[in-house]
Image (cartoon, rainbow, N blue to C red; front, side, top):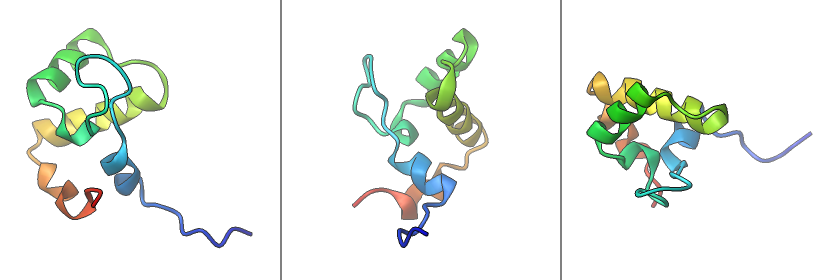
Length: 74
């Protein structure tokens, strides 16, 4: 049994960073919206990164970025 508290999926997403490319190291939630929309048109990568990017895309196009304000790393 683990004593480590589990992070909420939005908390995990709020701390996820782009691993490569022009925006390497940037928080996924801080990627420019036009870049995320472009990625959506190209097709998101497979795996967890793609899932995170797809979620960020949905959040950005629906204007819900404010959900991440209290979750940003300090």
